[in-house]
Image (tube, rainbow, N blue to C red):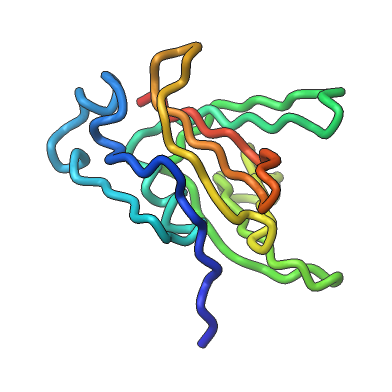
Length: 145
């Protein structure tokens, strides 16, 4: 049995108290807690009740930015190993059939070393940044539900 790598969460917050959007959620969701050491899967699972979530990826050199709003409550997650040995966590929404999923996000589990939880200065809502060990951003998640 392998143990999933743990993310180091800096600026630990109780998600339910982060912003107005979290405060207005039903009390059953108001007890979502993230600890100082949690897995990437646990972090993403904790965001499911706060769908929709805007996912933002800024490519190196800022030549492009990819944004997508997704119903995170419908995410299915799985880990796989690539032929090069990387372990990827895949979050996707599959609508069934033979067509490609309308949303799919792959995160390198070994590169995702920490995450920050806070309040977006732009929107005033919650913001989650998943970063590598050097602090470079892998993905920014903005729960809006």
